[in-house]
Amino acid sequence: MRKIISLICFLLPVLGFAGQSETNLQIRSDAPDQYTVVKGDTLWDISGKFFKDPWKWPHIWGMNKASIKNPHWIYPGATIFLDRSSGTLRMGKEDTTNEIVKLSPHIRSEDSSQNAISSIPSKVIEPFLSQPLVVDEQSLATAPTIIGVAEERVIIGTGDVAYAKGITTDKGNKWQVYRPGKALIDPDTNETLGYEAIFLGSLNVKTFADVSTVVITDAKQEINPGDRLLVPEAVIPHTYLPRAPAHQVAASVISIYGGVSQAGQNTVITLNRGERDGVEIGHVLAFTSKGRVLKTDNTSLPDERYGYAFIFRVFDKVSYALVMQARLPVQLLDHAVTP
Image (cartoon, rainbow, N blue to C red; front, side):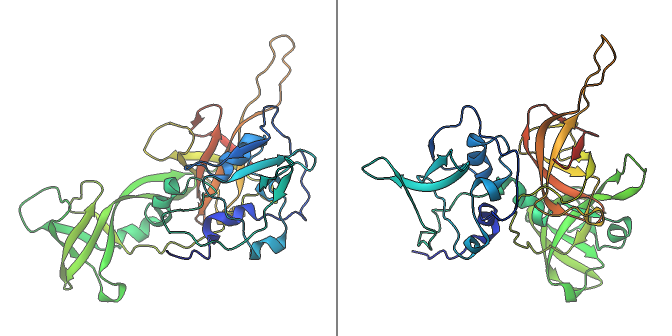
């Protein structure tokens, strides 16, 4: 048995701050009185079964700041109850009088295979926390380079021995292989915000020299001479506390992972706003479509909200977001704004 004493990375979103004011918390007309958690659920999913705005976890769960020290544990099999009088959710159990007995937060010992549910689909975003990058042109231009392979091959794959120039011993023997991708252009200003770096795989350095010998440990895509090497980034745990930005953010979708033109739920997108614009990890933005114009009198109807994006990684000028809900396909140049 392995004692799990913290799930800060993914469970803090339920530990909201009841002291913050929130309006328009609307219970869904088809909300059940209770729900039993199953494997694969997320906190967003569960909240969405009861409320129209599932990202408002801090208020939906009715927690306060003191709860951070004693987080709730939500595992498959737990029963979630809707308290319609207070408009909040709670874990509990029914006693013989059919009244809900509220369960107090506690530390729970569990085998590590029995994981508590995550706040958002963690497996979807995990590769984007340490692999795909947004870099400036100079970073890739000066990075170490694969120059050839031990045998006369054009394509390099897992287990192959290759050669690289520019690797230094001070950065360790583990490297990742990238290929320069497309430029990310701001549609509003035409500014180049950065360049996508396409993750190709990982390698270990066997021998350091002017021309170092490397071994490809994991090839996700074909690796060719000319591809660049970067040091792996450390994955930093985040609380992923969902919230609306405190200021007005108006972003555009400038890239959809996979090179496609439309995105659906659980797709990663790139937005043209980043740290310099006040965007933070955990911010929730709403997708909007321009309201149609009535043919009768040319009256413009209000823009319509059709989904949500959850920002999980922020660079200086751009950010990665996960499409959490989308009633319509999310398309390139669609707008995402403060909800």
